Image (cartoon, rainbow, N blue to C red; front, top):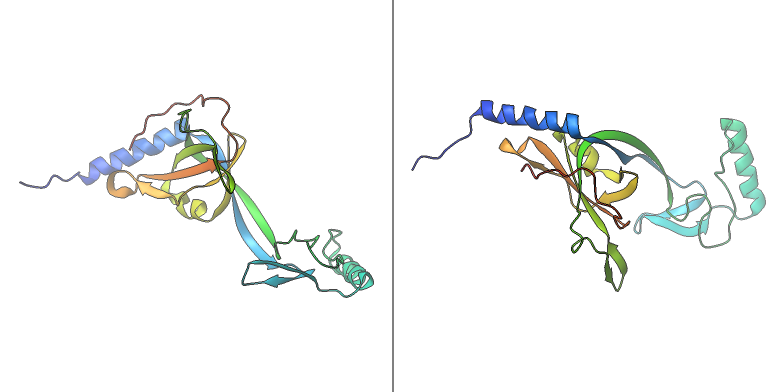
Amino acid sequence: MPRTRIHTKSKDRFKRSMRDIIRDLGRQVKVTYLIKKNECPNCYYDKATDSSTGKCKWRTPLEARTKQQEYEVSTGKVDLRYKFFKVGRCPICKNLGYLALYKKRWVKCLVNWDTDIDSNQAIYTQAGKSSASYVDLKTDPRHFELFLHCSGIEIDGVNCRMSSPPAMRGLGNQTLLLVRAISDVKLTKRSTEKLKDYI
């Protein structure tokens, strides 16, 4: 029995149609991603744990104050970069061990909240609450790298995080980018947008 193949023109037509749907029915989603990461100037960074050691680089408060004044004079900035602490949480990096610079980008996506009330309940485990609401996003495949390396997503004013890596779907596997995200906030109302699963 001969194998049926989908013609290239059909794939292109389907791809154009799906991208038109995203453009016309999609909503703006805010994607936050890391662009720069520098070691904290105030404490020692532990590469093994990817966090602060909890030890200050300065022996006295006067030494930290002097470094802060030098920083302000040389750069003209007044943000706090050097502050003495004995042991524990670094006041500059909040015990991360590094200072991160994030950027935000708006992406047009079809948004479909999981409105199945039975499966949308918060799950409580020994470690605490593990999930509350799922959301599926469908967008252009060119945003693959952005979603793959993003640190957070804001959808309809709700902060979410990726629950699994993004995946390409559709005819020829290049039509749509599917993103599954999870929110720690319980969805209180049903989404006004009810979309069929096109894939």
